[in-house]
Length: 349
Ligand SMILES: C[S@@+](CC[C@H](N)C(=O)[O-])C[C@H]1O[C@@H](n2cnc3c(N)ncnc32)[C@H](O)[C@@H]1O
Image 1 (cartoon, rainbow, N blue to C red):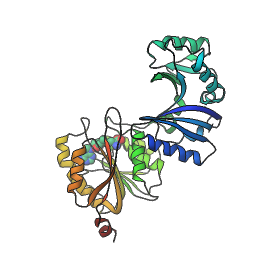
Image 2: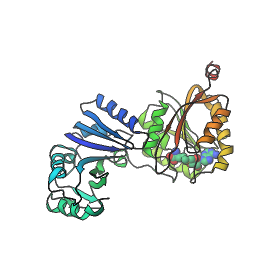
Image 3: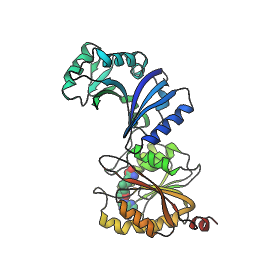
Image 4: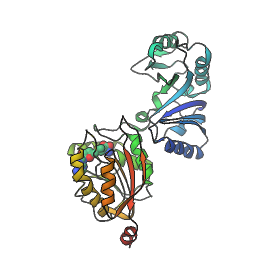
Protein backbone atom coordinates (compact mmCIF):
# COMPACT_ATOMS: atom_id res chain seq x y z
CA UNK A 1 0.00 0.00 0.00
CA UNK A 2 1.05 3.60 -0.51
CA UNK A 3 1.54 5.17 2.91
CA UNK A 4 2.24 8.58 1.40
CA UNK A 5 -1.01 8.98 -0.59
CA UNK A 6 -2.93 11.92 0.80
CA UNK A 7 -6.36 10.72 1.82
CA UNK A 8 -9.49 12.11 3.42
CA UNK A 9 -11.52 9.52 5.32
CA UNK A 10 -13.40 8.56 8.47
CA UNK A 11 -11.57 5.77 10.26
CA UNK A 12 -12.06 3.62 13.36
CA UNK A 13 -9.01 2.61 15.41
CA UNK A 14 -9.53 -0.39 17.67
CA UNK A 15 -7.75 -0.36 21.01
CA UNK A 16 -8.51 -1.61 24.54
CA UNK A 17 -10.94 -0.44 27.22
CA UNK A 18 -9.14 2.05 29.40
CA UNK A 19 -6.56 2.90 26.73
CA UNK A 20 -8.55 5.12 24.31
CA UNK A 21 -7.61 8.43 25.95
CA UNK A 22 -3.93 7.47 25.64
CA UNK A 23 -4.52 6.53 21.99
CA UNK A 24 -6.17 9.90 21.34
CA UNK A 25 -3.09 11.62 22.84
CA UNK A 26 -0.74 9.44 20.77
CA UNK A 27 -2.68 10.35 17.60
CA UNK A 28 -2.74 14.06 18.26
CA UNK A 29 0.97 14.10 19.11
CA UNK A 30 1.81 12.24 15.89
CA UNK A 31 -0.35 14.62 13.85
CA UNK A 32 1.21 17.68 15.49
CA UNK A 33 4.64 16.63 14.22
CA UNK A 34 3.61 16.15 10.56
CA UNK A 35 1.43 17.26 7.69
CA UNK A 36 -1.71 15.24 8.46
CA UNK A 37 -4.79 16.72 10.11
CA UNK A 38 -6.40 14.33 12.60
CA UNK A 39 -9.64 15.07 14.38
CA UNK A 40 -10.87 12.71 17.08
CA UNK A 41 -14.59 12.62 16.33
CA UNK A 42 -15.74 10.15 18.97
CA UNK A 43 -14.26 8.05 21.76
CA UNK A 44 -15.94 4.69 22.40
CA UNK A 45 -14.90 2.40 25.28
CA UNK A 46 -12.49 0.37 23.15
CA UNK A 47 -12.04 2.45 19.98
CA UNK A 48 -11.52 5.93 18.63
CA UNK A 49 -13.24 7.37 15.56
CA UNK A 50 -11.23 9.90 13.60
CA UNK A 51 -11.33 12.07 10.51
CA UNK A 52 -7.95 11.96 8.78
CA UNK A 53 -6.79 14.32 6.06
CA UNK A 54 -3.24 13.63 4.92
CA UNK A 55 -1.02 10.59 4.43
CA UNK A 56 -1.85 7.32 6.21
CA UNK A 57 1.83 7.27 7.27
CA UNK A 58 0.78 9.25 10.38
CA UNK A 59 -0.87 6.04 11.68
CA UNK A 60 2.02 3.73 10.83
CA UNK A 61 4.22 4.02 13.91
CA UNK A 62 1.48 4.25 16.55
CA UNK A 63 1.40 1.57 19.24
CA UNK A 64 -1.94 1.97 20.96
CA UNK A 65 -4.29 0.59 18.31
CA UNK A 66 -4.39 -2.91 16.90
CA UNK A 67 -6.63 -2.46 13.83
CA UNK A 68 -7.81 0.36 11.60
CA UNK A 69 -11.08 0.25 9.64
CA UNK A 70 -12.90 2.52 7.22
CA UNK A 71 -16.34 3.38 8.62
CA UNK A 72 -18.75 2.69 5.75
CA UNK A 73 -21.87 3.72 7.69
CA UNK A 74 -25.04 1.89 8.65
CA UNK A 75 -25.75 -1.28 6.70
CA UNK A 76 -29.42 -1.94 5.91
CA UNK A 77 -30.81 -5.37 6.90
CA UNK A 78 -30.69 -6.57 3.26
CA UNK A 79 -26.95 -5.89 3.13
CA UNK A 80 -27.24 -3.59 0.10
CA UNK A 81 -23.85 -2.09 -0.76
CA UNK A 82 -24.90 -0.93 -4.24
CA UNK A 83 -27.03 2.06 -3.22
CA UNK A 84 -27.57 4.49 -0.34
CA UNK A 85 -25.09 5.71 2.26
CA UNK A 86 -22.81 2.65 2.29
CA UNK A 87 -22.37 2.75 -1.50
CA UNK A 88 -21.61 6.46 -1.30
CA UNK A 89 -19.01 5.94 1.45
CA UNK A 90 -17.43 3.02 -0.46
CA UNK A 91 -17.15 5.23 -3.56
CA UNK A 92 -15.61 8.09 -1.55
CA UNK A 93 -13.07 5.86 0.19
CA UNK A 94 -12.10 4.20 -3.09
CA UNK A 95 -11.58 7.57 -4.77
CA UNK A 96 -9.90 9.69 -2.12
CA UNK A 97 -10.00 7.72 1.11
CA UNK A 98 -7.97 4.95 2.74
CA UNK A 99 -9.19 2.28 0.30
CA UNK A 100 -7.65 4.27 -2.58
CA UNK A 101 -4.18 3.81 -1.05
CA UNK A 102 -4.36 -0.01 -1.21
CA UNK A 103 -2.49 -1.88 -3.95
CA UNK A 104 -4.76 -2.69 -6.90
CA UNK A 105 -7.50 -0.20 -5.87
CA UNK A 106 -10.31 0.07 -6.80
CA UNK A 107 -10.37 -3.74 -7.33
CA UNK A 108 -9.55 -5.07 -3.88
CA UNK A 109 -9.23 -8.52 -2.33
CA UNK A 110 -11.68 -8.98 0.53
CA UNK A 111 -13.26 -11.38 2.94
CA UNK A 112 -16.48 -11.11 4.88
CA UNK A 113 -16.27 -11.55 8.63
CA UNK A 114 -19.16 -11.23 11.04
CA UNK A 115 -22.07 -9.87 8.95
CA UNK A 116 -24.99 -12.03 10.16
CA UNK A 117 -27.54 -12.68 7.40
CA UNK A 118 -26.14 -9.90 5.19
CA UNK A 119 -22.90 -11.77 4.46
CA UNK A 120 -24.00 -13.39 1.18
CA UNK A 121 -25.58 -10.23 -0.25
CA UNK A 122 -22.50 -8.14 0.65
CA UNK A 123 -20.11 -10.76 -0.76
CA UNK A 124 -21.95 -11.16 -4.06
CA UNK A 125 -22.47 -7.40 -4.62
CA UNK A 126 -18.84 -6.56 -3.90
CA UNK A 127 -17.86 -9.02 -6.64
CA UNK A 128 -20.59 -8.19 -9.18
CA UNK A 129 -20.93 -4.43 -8.73
CA UNK A 130 -17.59 -3.26 -7.37
CA UNK A 131 -15.34 -5.75 -9.12
CA UNK A 132 -13.69 -6.91 -5.87
CA UNK A 133 -12.20 -10.39 -5.43
CA UNK A 134 -13.38 -12.72 -2.68
CA UNK A 135 -10.01 -13.86 -1.25
CA UNK A 136 -10.42 -15.14 2.33
CA UNK A 137 -6.73 -16.22 2.50
CA UNK A 138 -5.07 -13.14 1.04
CA UNK A 139 -7.51 -10.35 1.85
CA UNK A 140 -6.67 -6.66 1.99
CA UNK A 141 -10.05 -5.69 3.45
CA UNK A 142 -12.14 -7.55 6.04
CA UNK A 143 -15.78 -6.54 6.36
CA UNK A 144 -17.70 -6.86 9.57
CA UNK A 145 -20.59 -5.23 11.41
CA UNK A 146 -20.02 -3.31 14.64
CA UNK A 147 -23.16 -1.91 16.23
CA UNK A 148 -24.94 -1.92 12.86
CA UNK A 149 -22.14 -0.10 11.00
CA UNK A 150 -20.17 -1.75 8.21
CA UNK A 151 -16.45 -1.55 8.94
CA UNK A 152 -13.78 -2.32 6.33
CA UNK A 153 -10.67 -3.33 8.30
CA UNK A 154 -7.40 -2.71 6.46
CA UNK A 155 -5.00 -5.66 6.67
CA UNK A 156 -1.95 -3.46 5.97
CA UNK A 157 -2.61 -1.39 9.08
CA UNK A 158 -2.87 -4.35 11.45
CA UNK A 159 -0.38 -4.04 14.29
CA UNK A 160 1.48 -7.22 13.27
CA UNK A 161 1.87 -5.98 9.69
CA UNK A 162 3.05 -2.53 10.81
CA UNK A 163 5.49 -3.68 13.48
CA UNK A 164 6.23 -7.33 12.74
CA UNK A 165 5.06 -10.39 14.69
CA UNK A 166 6.05 -11.15 18.27
CA UNK A 167 6.53 -14.59 19.82
CA UNK A 168 3.91 -15.04 22.51
CA UNK A 169 3.16 -17.19 25.54
CA UNK A 170 -0.43 -18.04 26.57
CA UNK A 171 -0.22 -15.32 29.25
CA UNK A 172 1.72 -12.80 27.17
CA UNK A 173 0.81 -9.16 27.45
CA UNK A 174 -0.73 -7.92 24.20
CA UNK A 175 1.50 -5.35 22.45
CA UNK A 176 -1.18 -2.63 22.81
CA UNK A 177 -1.42 -3.26 26.54
CA UNK A 178 2.38 -3.36 26.88
CA UNK A 179 2.53 -0.01 25.05
CA UNK A 180 -0.03 1.44 27.47
CA UNK A 181 2.08 0.25 30.45
CA UNK A 182 5.18 1.81 28.90
CA UNK A 183 3.38 5.13 28.46
CA UNK A 184 2.30 5.08 32.11
CA UNK A 185 5.95 4.60 33.08
CA UNK A 186 7.08 7.83 31.33
CA UNK A 187 10.59 6.45 30.75
CA UNK A 188 13.28 9.16 30.83
CA UNK A 189 16.04 9.00 28.20
CA UNK A 190 18.84 6.70 29.28
CA UNK A 191 16.81 5.06 32.09
CA UNK A 192 17.38 1.48 33.16
CA UNK A 193 14.12 -0.44 32.66
CA UNK A 194 13.48 -3.79 34.36
CA UNK A 195 10.75 -6.43 33.89
CA UNK A 196 11.22 -9.14 36.56
CA UNK A 197 8.33 -11.31 35.19
CA UNK A 198 9.34 -10.66 31.57
CA UNK A 199 7.90 -13.79 29.87
CA UNK A 200 8.35 -13.27 26.11
CA UNK A 201 9.77 -9.80 26.74
CA UNK A 202 6.83 -7.84 25.30
CA UNK A 203 7.02 -4.88 27.70
CA UNK A 204 10.78 -4.47 27.21
CA UNK A 205 10.52 -4.68 23.42
CA UNK A 206 7.79 -2.01 23.50
CA UNK A 207 9.84 0.13 25.89
CA UNK A 208 12.63 0.00 23.30
CA UNK A 209 10.23 0.93 20.47
CA UNK A 210 8.51 3.81 22.26
CA UNK A 211 11.23 5.45 24.34
CA UNK A 212 15.02 5.83 24.51
CA UNK A 213 16.00 3.74 27.52
CA UNK A 214 19.57 2.97 28.53
CA UNK A 215 19.58 -0.62 29.76
CA UNK A 216 16.69 -3.09 29.31
CA UNK A 217 16.78 -5.88 31.90
CA UNK A 218 14.47 -8.88 31.94
CA UNK A 219 14.17 -11.92 34.16
CA UNK A 220 11.75 -14.83 34.45
CA UNK A 221 11.70 -18.22 36.17
CA UNK A 222 10.99 -20.19 33.01
CA UNK A 223 13.75 -20.84 30.47
CA UNK A 224 11.28 -21.37 27.59
CA UNK A 225 9.88 -17.88 28.18
CA UNK A 226 13.35 -16.36 28.12
CA UNK A 227 14.03 -18.13 24.81
CA UNK A 228 10.98 -16.40 23.31
CA UNK A 229 12.14 -13.09 24.79
CA UNK A 230 15.51 -13.59 23.11
CA UNK A 231 13.83 -14.22 19.74
CA UNK A 232 11.65 -11.12 20.11
CA UNK A 233 14.64 -9.03 21.15
CA UNK A 234 16.61 -10.12 18.11
CA UNK A 235 13.70 -9.57 15.65
CA UNK A 236 13.11 -6.09 17.04
CA UNK A 237 16.80 -5.27 17.49
CA UNK A 238 16.16 -4.53 21.16
CA UNK A 239 19.29 -4.99 23.31
CA UNK A 240 17.72 -6.94 26.21
CA UNK A 241 19.84 -8.37 29.03
CA UNK A 242 17.94 -11.53 30.03
CA UNK A 243 18.55 -13.68 33.09
CA UNK A 244 16.76 -16.61 34.66
CA UNK A 245 15.76 -15.50 38.16
CA UNK A 246 13.01 -15.60 40.75
CA UNK A 247 11.34 -12.19 41.10
CA UNK A 248 11.46 -12.76 44.85
CA UNK A 249 15.30 -12.98 44.74
CA UNK A 250 16.49 -10.73 41.97
CA UNK A 251 20.11 -10.54 40.80
CA UNK A 252 20.02 -6.75 40.30
CA UNK A 253 21.92 -4.28 42.47
CA UNK A 254 20.25 -2.00 45.04
CA UNK A 255 18.58 1.11 43.53
CA UNK A 256 19.63 0.01 40.01
CA UNK A 257 16.27 0.24 38.17
CA UNK A 258 14.78 3.61 37.19
CA UNK A 259 11.62 1.98 35.86
CA UNK A 260 10.08 -1.40 36.60
CA UNK A 261 7.28 -2.35 34.19
CA UNK A 262 5.71 -5.74 34.62
CA UNK A 263 2.65 -7.95 34.17
CA UNK A 264 2.58 -10.08 37.32
CA UNK A 265 1.39 -13.70 37.45
CA UNK A 266 -2.37 -13.74 38.09
CA UNK A 267 -5.47 -15.69 37.11
CA UNK A 268 -5.59 -19.24 35.91
CA UNK A 269 -2.86 -19.24 33.26
CA UNK A 270 0.10 -18.31 35.45
CA UNK A 271 0.37 -19.03 39.17
CA UNK A 272 -2.54 -18.89 41.60
CA UNK A 273 -3.83 -16.63 44.35
CA UNK A 274 -2.31 -19.06 46.87
CA UNK A 275 1.17 -18.75 45.33
CA UNK A 276 0.75 -14.99 44.91
CA UNK A 277 0.08 -14.54 48.65
CA UNK A 278 3.73 -15.40 49.22
CA UNK A 279 5.13 -14.15 45.91
CA UNK A 280 3.67 -10.61 45.86
CA UNK A 281 5.02 -9.48 49.27
CA UNK A 282 8.41 -11.05 48.49
CA UNK A 283 8.53 -9.41 45.05
CA UNK A 284 7.58 -6.03 46.54
CA UNK A 285 10.41 -6.27 49.09
CA UNK A 286 12.77 -6.80 46.15
CA UNK A 287 11.14 -3.94 44.25
CA UNK A 288 11.76 -1.71 47.26
CA UNK A 289 15.42 -2.76 47.13
CA UNK A 290 16.12 -2.46 43.38
CA UNK A 291 14.04 0.65 42.57
CA UNK A 292 16.09 3.84 42.30
CA UNK A 293 15.36 6.73 44.67
CA UNK A 294 13.26 8.61 42.13
CA UNK A 295 12.17 5.40 40.40
CA UNK A 296 8.68 4.40 39.34
CA UNK A 297 7.05 1.02 38.79
CA UNK A 298 4.00 0.04 36.74
CA UNK A 299 2.56 -3.24 38.02
CA UNK A 300 -0.30 -4.98 36.20
CA UNK A 301 -2.44 -7.58 37.96
CA UNK A 302 -5.95 -8.89 38.38
CA UNK A 303 -5.10 -10.06 41.90
CA UNK A 304 -5.81 -6.47 42.91
CA UNK A 305 -6.63 -6.54 46.59
CA UNK A 306 -3.56 -8.68 47.29
CA UNK A 307 -1.32 -6.28 45.35
CA UNK A 308 -2.75 -3.18 47.05
CA UNK A 309 -2.48 -4.72 50.54
CA UNK A 310 1.04 -5.96 49.83
CA UNK A 311 2.16 -2.48 48.70
CA UNK A 312 0.59 -0.98 51.83
CA UNK A 313 2.64 -3.40 53.94
CA UNK A 314 5.87 -2.51 52.10
CA UNK A 315 7.07 0.56 54.01
CA UNK A 316 9.12 2.07 51.20
CA UNK A 317 6.43 2.03 48.46
CA UNK A 318 3.08 3.67 47.72
CA UNK A 319 0.52 3.62 44.87
CA UNK A 320 -0.03 6.99 43.21
CA UNK A 321 -2.25 6.08 40.27
CA UNK A 322 -4.13 3.17 38.73
CA UNK A 323 -5.64 2.35 35.36
CA UNK A 324 -8.02 -0.54 34.71
CA UNK A 325 -7.99 -2.00 31.21
CA UNK A 326 -10.14 -4.52 29.37
CA UNK A 327 -8.25 -7.26 27.57
CA UNK A 328 -9.53 -10.65 26.37
CA UNK A 329 -12.37 -10.76 28.91
CA UNK A 330 -10.11 -9.82 31.85
CA UNK A 331 -9.99 -6.44 33.59
CA UNK A 332 -6.57 -6.13 35.21
CA UNK A 333 -5.39 -2.91 36.81
CA UNK A 334 -2.03 -1.22 36.25
CA UNK A 335 -0.79 0.33 39.51
CA UNK A 336 1.78 3.10 39.36
CA UNK A 337 4.06 2.74 42.38
CA UNK A 338 6.71 5.15 43.68
CA UNK A 339 8.73 5.46 46.88
CA UNK A 340 6.98 6.56 50.05
CA UNK A 341 7.67 10.15 51.06
CA UNK A 342 10.99 10.44 52.91
CA UNK A 343 12.22 7.17 51.37
CA UNK A 344 12.86 8.88 48.03
CA UNK A 345 15.11 11.50 49.64
CA UNK A 346 16.92 8.95 51.77
CA UNK A 347 17.78 6.76 48.75
CA UNK A 348 18.62 9.65 46.47
CA UNK A 349 21.44 10.91 48.71
C1 LIG B 1 1.72 -12.60 32.95
S1 LIG B 1 3.19 -13.42 32.50
C2 LIG B 1 4.16 -12.14 31.84
C3 LIG B 1 3.95 -12.02 30.39
C4 LIG B 1 4.97 -11.17 29.68
N1 LIG B 1 4.83 -9.76 29.95
C5 LIG B 1 4.87 -11.44 28.18
O1 LIG B 1 4.45 -10.57 27.43
O2 LIG B 1 5.13 -12.58 27.77
C6 LIG B 1 3.98 -13.72 34.03
C7 LIG B 1 5.36 -14.33 33.93
O3 LIG B 1 5.85 -14.50 35.23
C8 LIG B 1 6.70 -15.65 35.25
N2 LIG B 1 6.84 -16.04 36.67
C9 LIG B 1 5.96 -16.67 37.48
N3 LIG B 1 6.46 -16.77 38.72
C10 LIG B 1 7.68 -16.16 38.71
C11 LIG B 1 8.67 -15.88 39.69
N4 LIG B 1 8.53 -16.29 40.95
N5 LIG B 1 9.77 -15.20 39.32
C12 LIG B 1 9.96 -14.80 38.03
N6 LIG B 1 9.05 -15.04 37.05
C13 LIG B 1 7.93 -15.71 37.39
C14 LIG B 1 6.00 -16.63 34.35
O4 LIG B 1 6.92 -17.58 33.85
C15 LIG B 1 5.42 -15.69 33.26
O5 LIG B 1 6.30 -15.62 32.17
